[in-house]
Length: 296
Image (cartoon, rainbow, N blue to C red; front, side):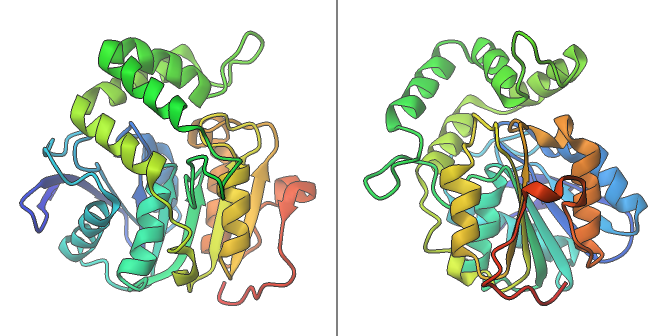
């Protein structure tokens, strides 16, 4: 540690903070585990062992040529768990693209070791527009993003992060310094990993994975998320996961780990402690009353 070797020989950068039952944090595209640092610090200070890692190709992890499909990425997660001996009473938290590893782990590994899951601004279950997913994002939009990244990735990321954090003419929920911090993270990744990972999260259909969720699951998503729209993701996932709570952050963008950090930490800690999350916005706390809610 801090580097671990996966089964295919790729080296991943891992952080292991605090003591207690493990909480594993999986970062989103195109960032690194550093994006979790303030939340990881808060969870560790609250009595949890917090493990985060840079996905292959991102941050300080090795920029492998292959392995950006979700089966391989999920095997990487399993290898991180093995290397850190995080085998039981684990909570798995995935942000954005990281929700895909959460879903695939539940089906590919039968959720072994996990007692709860949290999906934050997640791409699960299916982001791509299709005949049976009309509310998804058109393929043309993803193709244009890829072209723009190939042409000028630094410039693309500047614009992308404005949407990511909900910055507009009248809104600026994060500082210029935070934008620079996030942009620097995007530039740590390789071009090929950035493109291949985007291809994976934009095209992978996780609907078949969701019946494998057998643990209490919390979904948190901003209603103004233009990066990963809430309708084909969080609201659809709520309908397909058995033991689930959906908390909607009214008017919040994609990058709620910064724009709504205090509230997100509060909701995570409540869920980890067996309490009811979403108390700060009860009118937007959506529960499906037909579903069982045991195990908190």
